[in-house]
Image (cartoon, rainbow, N blue to C red; front, side):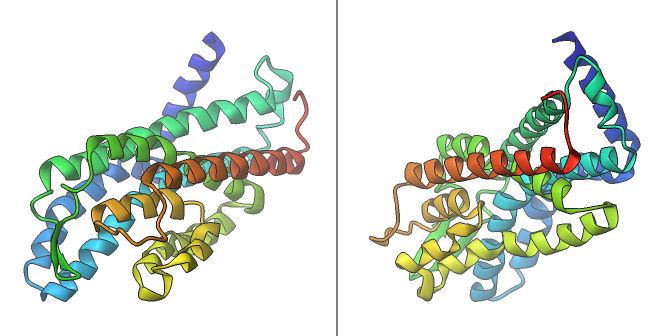
Length: 267
């Protein structure tokens, strides 16, 4: 266990020295400031329809981007390990390559959980009264509709998405330049759960979007926020369970792909 504490100290020092890594670490704080105070002020100067659209998009961003950025942080760290060929040197230490990657996955998962709790929980405490919209003839308070139980369950489940993002990014990006390209492309897919609010996807066709890992936990939260009781919707916990299982399988598959690409030894 002591060897992993040493590794953790080294990882934190490395992240804080890297400007990009430092930005990703403080990302939840930046998002909280923008989403909690700046955007509600902008919404007050818009029409009711535009405000509703803006606030829903912002909610999807806050639900999706925290874990995604945590995964990107780890992905770029692993890419750097590949570029500098340092990850192979770990194979001859007491910490195997597999152990080193798993160690990184655990601490980035914890960062993601904390980031989600801070961002969504902080918005619920400080900005709940700002995120009120008119939708379907009803007045909805998006953040007040979700309970703290929903916030905690979502944070713990959705944070597994970070592992999948990190492993896939490290597997398919040959260098940081390619990593940035994947980063931009991936950001577009994160917003696709918004399509589930369209009438076309309101029924069983919503599950077409289920190929996107973050669809399941995000859709569960959107249903609670928007008080969506369509008969084709699943129970909140079923959405979360499917999302959890899907992301675990995806992370395990990506882990094997990365080890194969690295030619990892010392398994």
